[in-house]
Amino acid sequence: MIKKLGPAAAAIAAVLAIPAVHAQQLQARECNASNIAFVAEAIAKMPDGKQKQTASDEISAASEKMAMGKTDECKDHLLKASLQTK
Image (cartoon, rainbow, N blue to C red; front, top):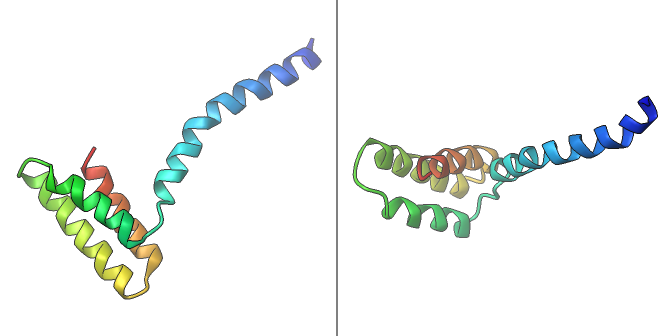
């Protein structure tokens, strides 16, 4: 009976891992002008308020870090800005 659970357990684990893959893709968003512009456009459509200000600050920081060649820091700020638009 344990052998019968092996493939089933593996299939269940694979299905449960799908959301983790999507979360990693969100975190791994490449820091480039296109992605920054995409998030900036979403920010522009947000209603005024604290969340929009935070997103604006983060996207500005992402742009600055990209210009400095600090891609890991840029990715962090881009993710933070993107999350504010949700």
